[in-house]
Image 1 (tube, helix red, strand yellow):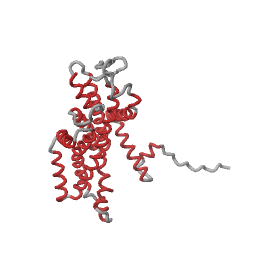
Image 2: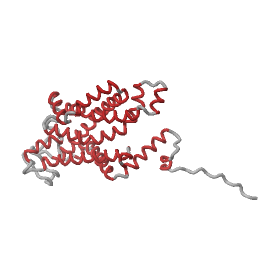
Image 3: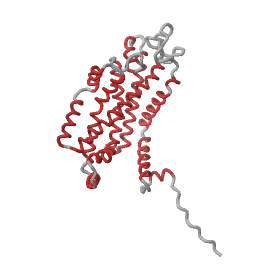
Image 4: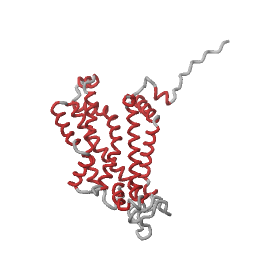
Length: 313
């Protein structure tokens, strides 16, 4: 008597095949698959991974600055530890003119750098996105008015306009962040407007309009999400400029005030010793260089991953 044939078992998809399938079974699977494809493109770029590593390192340093810092960031030993060179016992990067440990000040200063970057990003980017999408979708006189206001802000160098605003508001880290946010939104509005003008005439937006959606709903629910990828890339690429602007304000005495360990202010205090005790100004300058380079590498990688057609052009 012949044995009955067993039914063929259904193939079990691996998590990679499940993410890369051309026929997703749910919107969640399609969304996760898109993110995975973006990650594959991003991880293929070693320079982008380097930039991501710099950002992760900056986040970890800022989170554990109290643990990592060997000394106080605001108090120093003026009598016994003034202007010690790098490699001195107990002072890896040396000390400044007031006997404060430069390494400890750099570690705590990373928190101020992240604070400036984060607050400017969450303030300027939504303003630019709103102005750009409204101008691009509405068109006509509203577009002309909003874009002329944008052009007025773009006509002045960012640092000069930020200096004028801080001079009017008063020096301080809060006013510096506000001034940088005010002068940083126009490029985002330009990017969002250009993206919106390519989407507003599409069949997808026309179908939503025929379903009775209001202009506000179309902008918020359908156009803004389409502009996010380009906006994220632009914000990441602008982080280096934001850091340099904040450091410039601190160098001029308009940003964070002493004794806060802001990197630009540290360079300003070290310029008196630049010839003989070079490390006082060089160490915060190197920190600004590394972090700015990391954000630029990360932004380039995100641009290539989110828009591979632009990367190939």
